[in-house]
Structure formats: C-alpha cells, structure tokens
Amino acid sequence: MANPVVLLHGFTGSVRSTWQPTGLIDLLADVGRECVAIDLPGHGASEQKSHDPDDYTNLEQELLKRLPDGPLDGVGFSAGARILLVMASLEPSRWDKLVVAGVGQNLFVKDQGRGERIARGVAGNAAQDDPMAQAFSRYASEPGQDADAMAAFMRRRHAKLSTDELANITAPTAVVLGTNDFAGPAEPLVDALPNATLHSLRNVDHFATPKDFGFIDAVLSHLG
Image (cartoon, rainbow, N blue to C red; front, side, top):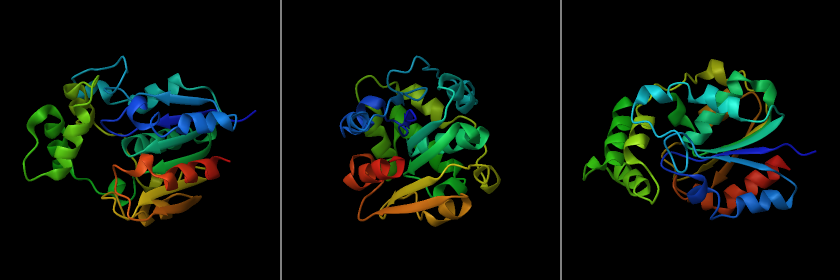
C-alpha cells in the first residue's frame, strides 16, 4: 500500500489556497495516494489560533502526534518545508520520501529583523519600502485568516535546524527552488542533506512556486 502524503503549506497559506487550486491533491489521489493536508497552527481552518507566540513553540512535536504512524511521504513549501525538515530530523524512521520547496540558504541565515518586519506586515503595519512584508500582508488578508495569529506564529521560537539536525534525515529529499526565489541559493541545503537532489525552476519566484508545473512534476516524479 502506498504511503500517505503529508502536505504542509507556507506562511500565510492554507490547504485551500495552496494545494487545492493546483489540483495536486487530486493528482496524488489519481495515483493512489492518500493526502494528509494540514492547515498549520495559526492558519486557515486550524483550531489553534493563539495570539501568543509561546503557544507555537513545540508545533513540530504537536504535528507529529497528529500524523499516521508511518511510513509517510511529505511535501512542504516555505515555512511548511522547514517544519517538515524539523519533523524528519526528530523522527527520521517515519519518513520515506520528502519534497521541500521554497527553502535553501535562508534556513541557515538568522534574520530576526526580517521576521519581525514580516510579522508587523501581516498584522497590518507593513512598511511602504518593504515589498516582502507587503506581499505577505496581502496573502494574510485572504478570507478566513487570522492576521494576529499568523503574526504570533512568525514570532514563535523556532526549532533548531542546523547541519547537525539535517544530517539525521535519512529520507531521499527533493529540494525544489525557483531561480528567482529569495530563499536561495539551494546548494547549502542540498549539501547538508544526506540524500538530496535539486530541482531548479527557471524564472520562478517564491510565491509562484506551489502553482508552477515544474514543482508539481517534481513532486509526482520524486514520490513515484
């Protein structure tokens, strides 16, 4: 029996806005895959919409408790990709294959100031000269989203994810990154993972990645 596929969207996204418009869930179902598509805490239809950053501190451990025992495959975009990698480093035996998109060198560069600017933007206070914060602010304003909960999610204490944690991941991992994505380059992440392949999306930026045919093809081909 084929492994269930866990789908984790990015910051300010949701199952409805990220995975449903592309038909990815239907395409995976067509090849016999059950999808476990989760709205991250603070997002979409999640029941957890706390405005306190401390309530999101252990979200990877909490998500692991909600998942089937495994083996599992996983697909994550942006913040969802980081969370997926953290979960795979904590419990590597539960994961068979992974696809992570919209992440690369940014995982190794701590920029607390940028995170706070994005959190302020999501809460409705984006600076006029900060296009990234403005972009996240637009996505956060979609119906059903709780801007203050997402700002708290951004301000949480992030789980450690260094080369030591990444070295624990045994699952073959496809790293998918657009050539115009601010998260790049991808090579530091590819080099840190024990079994990784790179799929570059030409002229694709960060926000366009989930809807790009190259990303969808990479998911379907890697997961088989």
